[in-house]
Length: 426
Image (cartoon, rainbow, N blue to C red; front, side, top):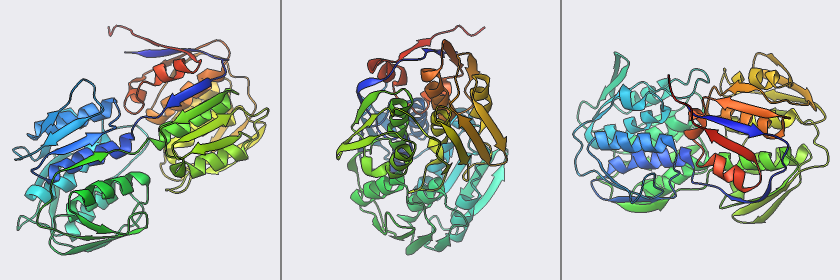
């Protein structure tokens, strides 16, 4: 298994580009199943989860065409679906496999989807997805680790759905199910994330009738069929936020291009509160300069437009270098402080009580061997390694490969001393 070796202490300086958003690319690829016509997608990040999704679509008999491997441009054609199934072998590492459930139910009225895997950050139940599909007339069962669903009349019907809690993948799944359903579907307490809005934009290009995007209430009028389209995925706001923290934590001067500053409001506000000067250069570029002194600032993870849970580990790394106390409250997932113990092994002063982590700084971090527990924890440990003295070796970096395109090359390009170490599996 590959590892990252990092020698800390280098201020990052220069310009780095952001890739397409993994959490947008996955649902738009699933949405290609909704039409028999050609769907061309651009700015797809070259990460493991997207390769897994393309294999899953190919298993369902979609024709997935790329010009290189890995690729940022995909053409997907699904004239027929011979396998309305997402098997465990293909999806065990990727929770987003459940996003094929909605399109399959909309297109053919039947689906068999493995219960999702992914990061070890606590329970992320799909109950809300299934309850909503049942309201749309689906018959749902679970057997041998699979969700088995069917629409008795072959077609779902519109419904008024109120999500008990905000769910991004649930909103996306039911949106895709509703675009071909009979009648109108109303989704209340829907997720407002930019990735949801990006999916709506693509579905609308395909002929879907959706209004309310960007709000917590979405209305979908089902149509008879959708057509093909061409769509460019939005920039990855979590990668952009991670790079902002990298510039701030190392005391560097980093310009981040090909991003969407309007999606980074909560992160920018929190970094400025912590003492890191941020400049929005233009509509696609933002600059961060390391503060002379970082100061502690509390943060609570929330649904968009609040501070993203996917930025919590990265912010914790920053907090270890800030003067004073930072209280980090995790309100989205119940098991997302696994990186804290690894940072503590590096010398961080962190105490955990329930859903709250208290970080006291600044701490003189020192390099050691640490293990990544999930995708964003990996990023947090990389950031900690960038400021630690000596050498940090991060194991299980296959997690970070699921969501960050070329992270080693990008960081090396702006001055980080980081390399990927290939190790043989015994």
